[in-house]
Length: 307
Image (cartoon, rainbow, N blue to C red; front, side):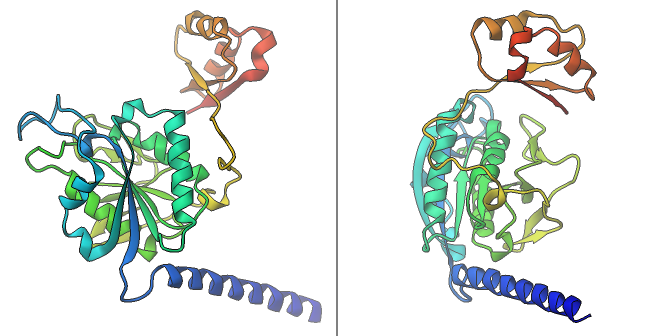
């Protein structure tokens, strides 16, 4: 009995010590009565776009407004955080690539390692928000909040959604409630987790959803309200580290479908593509069928995936 009791006391002491460490970490970053320090990293996208008129919500030009103008357009930001802006790059998000992701990830990790940075907001085009969010959710090495935000209407449109989305993102990034929840995506007052969020409509402001599990929470009354958290490993708890990488490996995709043929397979093989993932909607049957199309000498380089 004494051994069991001693073990329980030991475990309880460890848990208590860990709780104190977590509490002290949050207390240092979010002191009562003081505004959090939030850095906005701007990458372009519709949130920084302009149209020919106030009614132009299609056919506009993305990535034309700089980060400082985005901040100045929402003076209320000063009431919720000490905000700094940095233009990492200025592109439409369909042009996001491995080099962009690696540069962004390294800059996020550099900033979060500083004691005077409590959270990060990344302004981003909506076409590839979910890819960027998923990637950062794996490689960011901090429990401090990282929030990705975009807009479905350019900054010049009537009822542009960018300003309120940016306000919510900064509020969320500066909240202790967002600590340890992984990379978050916030638009339309809705908080989604990076692992599960997807864009469901090319025009509606209510486009980012998690069909399987629902929203993680929502923004209301200048504060986040969370329903749930992700139990999957993310950010500081993953094994992925990009700090010493100069490039990311190129991975191409072959999709499985009914009546699949060799055209895409042969094109990748002729190009000597070194890494390919096979994406399918079935529980393995289409994967096996498509694998038969690959040269046997290269099957070890193919990764199958069902969704």
